[in-house]
Length: 502
Image (cartoon, rainbow, N blue to C red):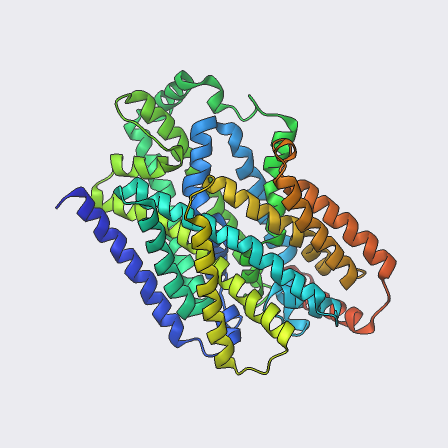
């Protein structure tokens, strides 16, 4: 059999497995709560790997290795910021959000939680939140489709558009029918594949390039600064890279996993699993880029036309075609895991936070699930249209959407969980300020080239939300009671409290 046949066998087997999980989840999905949140029944292992896989997307195997291959370890500050941000997200947000969303009206989406938490009778906050999710996630899903097109283009010499459509079709199929359970369990499988692949490529690649010493020498021959995280770095550049970590607090497709945990207690185990997975994966991505630099230095006849394809290219060079096919499946897993999560959250925003909020419908559960599936289809079509022209790199598209969510939702989520005096008016003003700041800043090159737009978006959002809340705050017994109950339940579920009582 040819190399391409072996690779296609592995890839088709992976795609069929994803569709099988979607079919299994379809049989377990009976109402909107199941479709959007899986009945709040995820264990820590599935929650952790699902959050990680949906978080990292194609940028982990394409965007980040490509940036480091082209520029060097100075791009690694993004990985540092993300690791710190992810740990804080699990530590600070996960337990309280899991408890508070159930205490406050059994909320199943981020916008519905904010409305219930702040007792916003106007519904403006919920609608504005839903619109922000729809707009930025459409760009985010589009970035995933771009990555899918590039993947097939680099791996099989297929056309960009064919690859994009294949990825979109499979993801839409299992997300549309299987909902949250399908997304979470496919993410779990995909996260496992990604981790194994990211360990295998740099480890085996080191033997090909002659070990650590020889690899480092080859990298220095290309550019001595490639192995430094400081050479070529600026203070603003490092701060911008570290600021990626701020984005975690406002990513709806990640924090929805916290809401689906069985108990707040399980956030501790999930945090340890998730951060361990993340560290190994990021080291693997960085290692892949460095081994790639050395390999192409040592083999000048070999040519890498696209730095973002370095993981794909190395896998095809150093492994048997069947194993290379599994590595290709890992890239596809990274892309698909994020698209599916984003599609589901966008669907929930359209149905739960826009359709139900605006029209106050009495639709049945089966009708709402149908509307959710139609929403998945509609967003997919719009994202595909945006991705058709392949504008911008994967990392650039992800960076814009990541900043949009971090700058608009991040401060509001933190304040809602930890500050009693946040008001609906303050949250709405902060949310709008953060979103507008990111859009304006991100589209002015003189500003965005100096500082990542998430920084001003996050800062101004926080400032406006706090000031407006202090001006509009009025004590509300219902809000106070729910805040106290959420804190009490988190403390009661904290393993440290068990130890103290013992």
